[in-house]
Image (cartoon, rainbow, N blue to C red; front, side, top):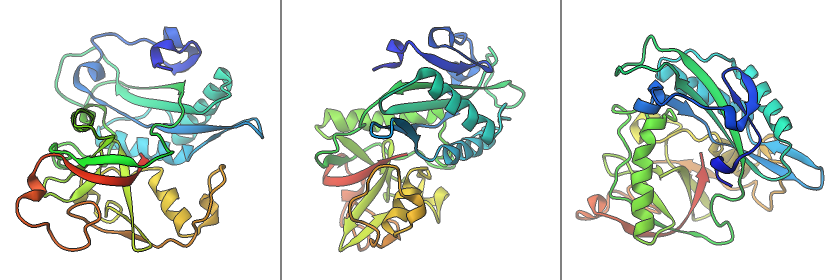
Length: 290
């Protein structure tokens, strides 16, 4: 279902309202300049228990507040208040299926001016039914994108900034046009950063390998995925992070955070100009939505 087909409720301008009433002016600063930050949160319907389980709701909103700080925003709601609003919104919509939740903090004034300070901030949330983002029954056919991940000193990749996602959209479209399912994006230096909209995990020699974003978020130009941490801890056997769905196996897979020049590379830089070339077939790899 697309957002335009949604007939339930949204949180907008400080209240839960019919989805059709949640509208902004075409002069809104965020609409004109991309001055907003957001989260993508998943909730999973458990038919046996007849309950909807949200994945790391508080952690997502903590990250949203960190993104807001980078954009010089003053969120109108606290983390706890955002959590409460989202729970009430899910109850109002009465979903009985898997759901995607999209909260947005945005510069709300109708203003033509390239700046961040002195502009009113507002918060909204909408939800849509959504199943698996990828076909989880098979591996993903991935290619290295000629579009590089935007430098952290240009647009901080640590924040989920709306305007910066044109970088991901260019890479994603290019990958699909070339016959791939998803793009692998490199840093400006040619190291693996992440997918166009997902953190990457590789399994090699019984080890789970992911980027060094936790140790070097600025250097690796990748977002700190709110869902990546729980998956890492699951592989390390932390029972406190087991999701509501059954997990088969796992619990004893060592995780290594490191830089890589290409997917699966365990050594130094690849030979020749391969690192800076266009789309390359990277075979199947794991992707975890941020």
